[in-house]
Image: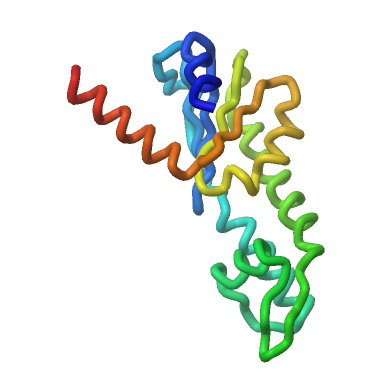
Length: 165
């Protein structure tokens, strides 16, 4: 994967960081940041978890399901409520629909540009990967093996470069 990222350094890349509350993007042409094609929207993992929580709550008559419990139910395929095991295997379609909506909103916010690659990172990368691939079929979409750690590594490399400059 590192080699694949290294090979993008002489290309135009759109880096998408999907966090808990925001979806941020950074346009990089060769090795320079293009801030005029970068931005952020208030959309991320929390919006998907909110949709899941609402769905589960209505379906099972639960007043409110906390985000932690919602995420666990999504990942595990079930949750325990008042001693009952409740299966949640039908949640994938809810996640995909919400991610599709958010990625479409993101796509409408980015300026048209000729990107070679789209690099997907952040804690929500895996949750959003399918929607990103569907809506950016013509781009080489690179989903990092450990998208959360990639952010930390990127901050480290940036700081190291600043120190050497």
